[in-house]
Image 1 (cartoon, rainbow, N blue to C red):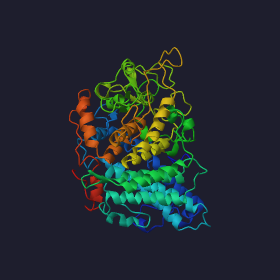
Image 2 (cartoon, rainbow, N blue to C red):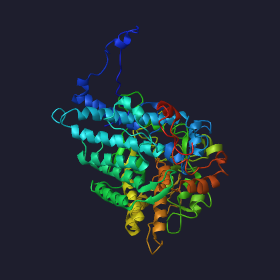
Image 3 (cartoon, helix red, strand yellow):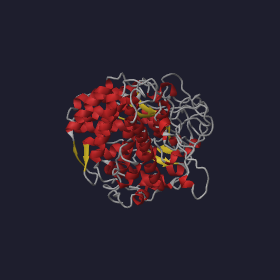
Image 4 (cartoon, one colour):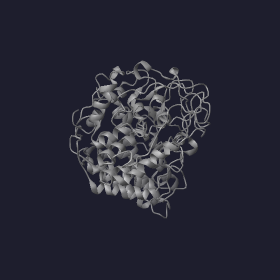
Length: 579
């Protein structure tokens, strides 16, 4: 079901512009009878699904991207904003440096507004479904589960972006929304509501759906596990992590086990994640569906990533969202093929030769475009300086992971640059394995986490490595690729502390450029240390625009509540600390 740009327009067409137009009956409204028909309610449900890709449904989605590239990676140590310099979308530069992030930032208000539009689409569908009977609409229960799933997803995004958010369901009249405080519920209570919504959805959703892209039982259970894991890390009013709830962690383990019963697995090759042919495969638990050649002008592509293709000859893009030097350095491995948890950032891995003098995880060249390295199946030459738009500011790396290969029939030729039919994975099975491993480690059962982490690493190890540009054979690789498995008592001392660090680093490597890293750092309560000590302190010497960047603990874990929304509430909304 390629639903992302389907827009449901409810237009009021009045008879004239005379003074008595308010007394005229609208001629173009959808009647209640139409909405309560099977076709009408399906249209409402489709509108709620389409909001997954941004409710505006156009190229303007890049200003409030649903892919979270700017919110989850550019705000972390894994990526730079990129583009044409710090003034090119200066709002995102403010997010990246944590300087000048004010409540009057228009793109924050836009993000808040669009997420609440998305909530309202789900609420509208739920209201109509509640007013119908199973006899009138046999799919009523299933669609209710889907809408509760979507509503919970939109609230989850609001919670981890803004923390203090007003929460309301379909039973609250629209005119009452302005009376609901964003301080009525704590972070813990909001996450509890969200997890309960996913649980309710899982109870009525089928194990499989006839149309790809619809939420099923296992997607709801997986998202319940994610929301529960976030909730397990208890925060005080200043966003400090003060405890980790063991009971909730046990729930996460159980939920992940239930998801595993759904027949999911890892794709055999890491690079298959960027191939449309595998997008709804065994690893995909829930994804946003995209398409081209579907009868629309530009295709139902991922407009959130409109800016993120590199400049070079294969895409001619805008060059936003560039991997950081810190991320590249993270892929260095030791003599056992394991991550260099303590020393990875002691030197910079920059040239082709550097990646032969050091051993590296093969996911480096699946994820990052590097000078002199083959770019997917592009035959025009290796990645070179011409691919980078603003190297003096942001360096030469480009995001590579979720761009389809240039020769693919699923990629738009020309503008929109790099646009393709590739889905955006919101939850894939690697997530579930690593969530369970994390919960087990925090429960003191770190030995049980070893095979889960190793399973993710084994897939990377068995993938087809990137070949040198002028390779002389099938094992003439572009770097000295070495990746090993954790063997407690043999190559590591697998204490709880070491296991925790290994798990967190594995998430960085496996999920790089997927919009999750910053939220992980906040959830673990280590954002200030990682950003200030491991990232800004070192990279400001090579990325001068980071000279004054600094994460302020107790403030920057969440965005400010947009001033426009505070004004709309008549001052009812409370601002987050520090703004």
